[in-house]
Amino acid sequence: MGLLKTVDSQLFQAEIPYKPMGKYAHFLTIRITESYPLFQTDGELNKARVRAGVKDKTTISRLSMFKRKQSTPERLVGRELLRKYEFMKPEECEYNVNFAMDNPDCIIYGFAIGDSGSEKSKVVVDTAFSITAFDESHETFTLNAPFENGTMASKGENGSKPGEVTSRINQQDHIRPQVFFPSIVTLKDPTEASFLYVFNNILRTRHYGAQTTRTGRVRNELIGVIFADGEITSNLRWTQAIYDQMKANNSLNSPEPLDEDEVITAAKNAIATLMSEEFIVHTDFIGDVFEPLLKEVKSLTANEAGIKSILQKADAEAKAYANKHISKKKTAVKAGKE
Image 1 (cartoon, rainbow, N blue to C red):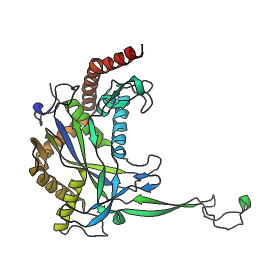
Image 2 (cartoon, rainbow, N blue to C red; image 1 turned 180 degrees about the vertical axis):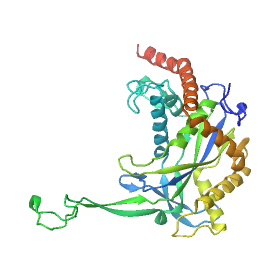
Image 3 (tube, helix red, strand yellow; image 1 turned 30 degrees about the vertical axis):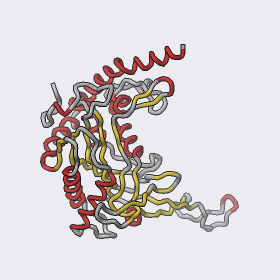
Image 4 (cartoon, helix red, strand yellow; image 1 turned 90 degrees about the vertical axis):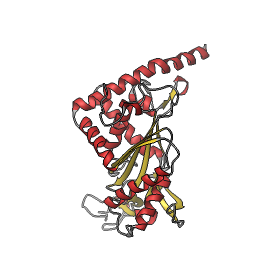
């Protein structure tokens, strides 16, 4: 018996298929920074020079949130839950070291272990872009190291003169709070359990970016889900369409941060317009139609019995898939070496 009553079971696969079968679930997510996260490579914030909108041809620089910066934290949240409810043992499956190859994380998000085997991820995430320009979305902080007396001046240790201000200062660009990154997370050939597993991971994940920092708080606002027989628009085009909507509504009041309600409204309108231009078969859960589904998922994931039922079903599907397909791969690899 299915866990969801608000979604037609025909939109899901009965089991995880070995080959792509043309069913997609697209999670429409607005990622909102709530502190000062770092999305960087080689010490610099990631950014891209792109058009401001679909209609607005002005060129601007936007902050970029690469796909691994999005999928890895969500994946780790799922793994944490699997360990908590004892569907995964830490010693049997260590992320990026020794994958067990038969649990929901490995089968849904994929793995690669040299000659031992690999599984392609069924979760597709692309680079997300800030709605606002780079100059409006980041801030440079000066970092320094205080002494025990609570000042930046030394007491004369290590050859320095008492009262001398030290040079232990560094500068780092951080992303400002209330910067919005529209992002579409796609799950290929979803079963009901894998759909709920990914849905829950997106809802629960709270920190993104550099994991060594004490900041990085990000909130995910899900505004809808689209089931389709193909992939839909890109993150960049959706972001540009949102920018056009907000510009037309005079909602871009730089340097003031964007209003969240206005962003959500523009995001819903923009995706509705973009989907009307698509040439694929799709079933949209956006706006008022999405609310019953979101409420049902939250009620399931907010109690121990509900989350256990999701993980148990996802684990059973993953192990059935692994027994049927992964074991064959491992046997073929061993035969090839003999």
